[in-house]
Amino acid sequence: MWRSTVKSFLWRTEGLNIINNFHGSCSRGACERTWVMPSGFDTGLKTFNSLTKQKEPLILAREGIATWYSCGPTVYDHAHLGHACSYVRFDVLQRILSRLFGITVIHAMVITDIDDKIIKRGWEENISPTIIARMYEEEFKKDMMSLKVIPPAAYIRVTENVPQIVAFIQRIIEHGKAYATKEGDVYFDIQAIGQRYGKFGGAVDSQEESGSSGKKDVRDFALWKRAKPHQPYWESPWGPGRPGWHIECSTIASSVFGSQLDIHSGGVDLAFPHHENEVAQSEAYHQCDQWSNYFLHSGHLHLKGSAEKMSKSLKNYITIKDFLQSHSANEFRMFCLLTKYRSAIDYSNSSMSEARISLATISNFFSDAQSYMKGQLQCLPVQDAFLWERLAQTKAHVTAALADDFDTPRAMSAIMDLVYHGNCQLQPISSSAGADRSPAVFGAMTAYIRDILDVFGIEPFHSKETEVMSHSGSLQAVVDQLTQFRSEVRAFALAQQTTTSKKPALYPERIPLLKASDDLRNNLAPLGVLIKDRGATSTWELTKGKEDQKSQDEMQQTPV
Image 1: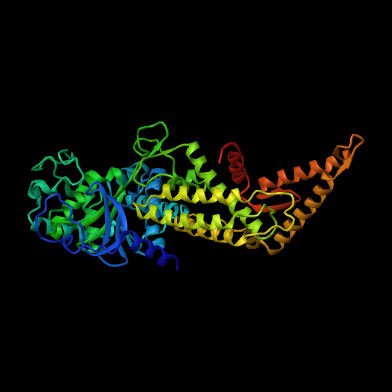
Image 2 (image 1 turned 180 degrees about the vertical axis):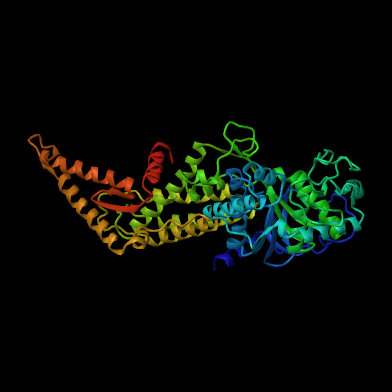
């Protein structure tokens, strides 16, 4: 039902727009740098394509299937938030495609497990580069799991594909697009492809590499590096050595997906020279004009106040493991959702606070809506027709935003606006005196918001009953009885007497009971039980203790 509704929306807004009058992505006609719109299945979505530097219709080679390759980590150190930001953002995009628009994403990612940095780290720690690579590869995978990133269909190591890389290089040489030096290096010949080089800009820059004296052109880049003393190497027709950086991605992507790729992703810093060189190699190997139809690049993560990206080389990074000591995966994912995936993003306490407040606002709405549906929260009559209309509008706005280059900030704005209007209807009063109730609309609103958050990879906000029952069925009854007892004591303490001045006032001897009730509520909050006084009654919910209490405090200081 969910996907059919979304598809119906896309067909109404975009229409059936399959392009039949263009060459396929690997047709043989010379097109220089011109991007050719692929033929195939029009998804109805638009995405910003770095190849054209504008939004383009997302057209896939096969209906309902997206082939997706991404550059993985070079595993020589701990992954940091800069890495996390890119991987989480693209995870969100893949989830949107699959869970909202019904497109199966076939995702492959390379693990660079042989590299100068890995070798250097091995020397520094007197450990085999293989051990270094395996250790940090496993840590990377654990970090991704902690951030709720869906694993690719396959993680593929460079060292397990060296024979395929050698064969790939041989084919490029046979096609006249690469050459070997007498020293045993192999370089890609930029001049051999003429004006086809430079899809991402920066083509006039040289690519200085150690031992590059045998180059024909300063722009030529290494496909195979001859062996150096005391370094790992593999045999090849050009002598012992190891693969260059760029060739690994071309070979592995081609071995998985063949001569045509729908989507290639990575950080914006990889556009040149890495992705530029990947395109040159792959199109030389396959002898095609357009290897990957779409390149998506994520913006850098900056520490607020710094113009430089977060990176290991600049020593200005926060590891994922350290970050998760004080924050949750939900908070980081919300932090990423609040900016466009292509935009640079500033990391700071205030930006994380904004993400935390957004989550707390939604969680509080869920709690209040549940209390209202159960009859525990008394309110004035709800304008349910208005809320049903707002829900329908929100669904349309969210779908339109996500179909337009995965605009998550616009989608989240629509969600938060729906929460705001829901909260406006849930203002507690002491007694409703049998007023009409409209619980169904709140059930529909919370169900929809849960579904969208699930699309984004944010864990659903479980009801207090579900949370408690997962620990112990009897605990729910204990907390219910405690809350009920406290409510009765509080009601007794709040009873008023008529004084000689005829003004109602509390009984002085009962004031300590009121203070004790407040103390109990305040003392339970850091332990993860949040009691909310609602007129004559009280409700409770489970939180994450001090972390959620901090969110509550921040919300009280921030206008909603």
